[in-house]
Length: 231
Image (tube, rainbow, N blue to C red; front, side):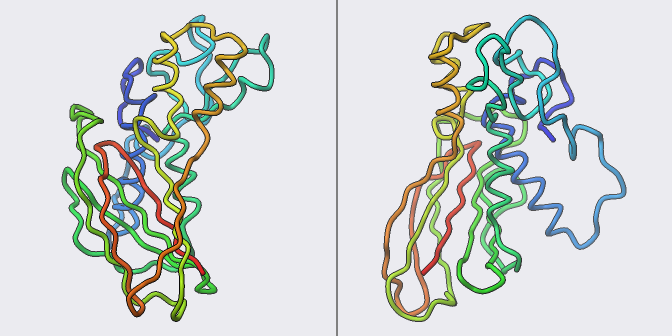
């Protein structure tokens, strides 16, 4: 799954793919009438990069969601996630029961989807900011005002964990560019790329007002956040 059918388009490598995937999966799930068909690049993709060129890291907009790695380096270089793969990781962390979410846009900008775990032990809110075409600045942001009503936990403190995938979080591509875009990273560079690809999150304990909780935060263009609330 990716934002372009064009081989060599860097949007397949960077954060544009992450927000695109979140948006497409959300809108497909919210649509009362599923589309009659898809272009092949819209709903499926190879999970590992094609073996093209001599680069062992990013291959310049190649299809795939995981880096193929370097056999001479070994395990540290295998299956390093692109931002698009990390978007799927966040989607996988959502719950079994879909909840209503209002206030977003199906056009360019911010939208959200919400779920709850089947046992009501957690609520998950996916927030993404996508601009079609990949032409907006990834450093620009929109201020998001999020209110979660009818929390199922009763009274008392609630734990909040916010995962982020954007230009500087869970993004091996940005880290690779920062290394000088090496065609064949060294072992220490691969270790750094693997660490940069890991999901990261911010955690806090909050006290809701009644059974509602509100928060305001900036959501960058081409970014995905997942807020998980639990007792």
